[in-house]
Length: 467
Image (tube, rainbow, N blue to C red; front, side, top):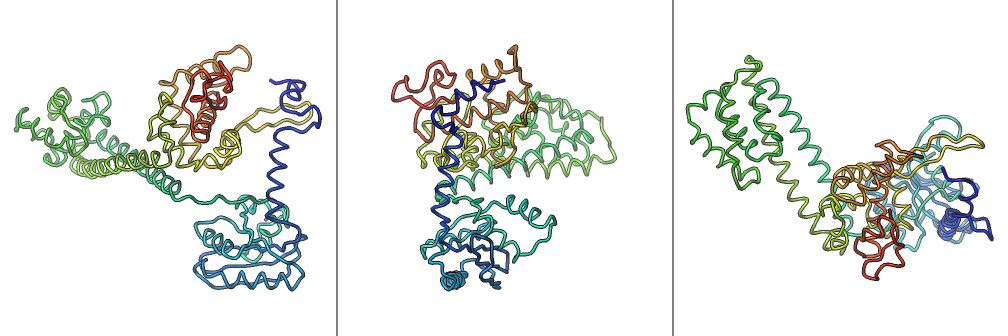
């Protein structure tokens, strides 16, 4: 536990008493005030599928004008924005600031319309709007017109943010990352289905390989059996081991393999005569196993293609070389994380990226009470899941991260649980990725482990201390 004296000496300026967090917050508020000056009227826009609500207000949340239009496409709001500017000028305002929730992709049209007209544009988080809706009158009373006024009020209170400019290359990587996540979910579901079906219809098949679903030979043999045996795998014994092996060898390329493992194909051939399982349902279960196996084959083939495209996209973005220097992290897994973070350069610091993932610790202290700190779980859940998965593999192959995990779980004071240590390692990994991609450096184990400060390393390998 960090003492109060050390906390003040480390993070608080002796001259002003202002923390680094206060300075960053003040800078962020100053930037928002430039976008939302007090001389501007506020235009809150609630975007819906076929109805768009606009509310022109002042900074005291007094409604100056309202308008509800029936348009299905947000790019048709141009003349209605001109109407809002004109109504604001009638009330004595020289300009307006437009705000909306970033729901779907409709807000991108509104952003473009504002840029074409030289109008300041900001966004309000839907979660902030949801909480403020209940604070308004302690009910969940909701309508598009009321939400438009609420968005304008939150903008006047600077509870908004400047949306990022969507870069085409980063948007492509994000799409590929989401497609990869869907394919991983589909493939995992198919594996569970096949395992359940075989455990009921033909359990001996699951024991023919140590890791059956990672074996191309095992998958090819299962495809041969489900296509040819009907309800009785023992029928394939009539073919003989040699012919059965040839059939399996012909199926191996369809599952992305090159060579046959004779040991596994022989074990499957020996298991053909096993009669364990529910014989009455074997025919239907084996048919469904064949369908799920085909879905698994297609999903894994598409997954390999998507990962190749994601790695190629890292080369386009110019970050592949930096990320390749981290031991234990493949290019595909690094691309999966960057697909959820977007361009790390848009964050002011590596800590901001950690907070964006929701793995930053959230304090729970008041007076003399010191509650248990937990992660915030705010931000992007998909990013948190991606970095959590990558950390598991890196704990076995990255010596610096493994040493950090061991130190956190074995130290005498302040020992962390395995889950807490895993989260700490995931946060460290995000800080590494931030340093490597933003500063275009290579990974240095001395800096990552804190042995030397980053300003003492060679110019070609320096990066901010991240461990």
